[in-house]
Image (cartoon, rainbow, N blue to C red):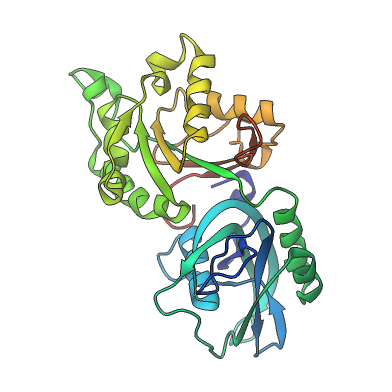
Length: 332
């Protein structure tokens, strides 16, 4: 939970996305191969307005999962999430006349193909249009949607993503009698790992890396199994490997960003805050919305940093945005 979310207890939660694609039409309408970018806007007949795709969370659903599901339901497209675009708040009336506070979290999301059912006209959405961002801005009915679109267009659409995970719960070091490298996940840690196995695919991972600790590898082993890839050991991203030469550890992380596909890196709490802080300082990224109560870069066990970097072809990767998910469960 971010610093902002600690003070925001909206009773109604929803999620959505600025869904984008390369401009040239694909055969299914959800992907293209051009240089320019188009975004999806949807028409809602109930309100006769044009909106970004969004909808309420189902019970027990995470915010990222709701964003992907709602995009599929309202546009007929499968999406891979990228950076967060902030949240919109507004009051809503309940059936019994009470007023509640609604929060809608938005993500950048790339369309990667049609969903199994494709677009289906419904009472909620009866039309989808793909438009250049400036044309979409003029069509969107609500100022809040236009502001979210503005956050999207402020940075490149084609960012590179790295998913930086702290290993799940593994019990107290003082209570483990064996080699600490071999300390395994606890029952609670295995539950976190299973939740990460569901959460991480929403961001399109392709490769899996871990500090050479059993608990780090176990945290992402299920994801690696699902992807059909090995867990690559990363000695420079363990606490013992990182601190003798932090610059070498940072260089290794940036090398992973430069390779093809979205990497997942499972590391330790003694490494992640320094790595994220160094990247943010070099890229001029403001981490204050995510800092903990003591002003430190957070890294709870089982947490996730979604790190967005400059696009390929623009030289060495530079951090553009950093989004923290404090846990892989709902309400994170």
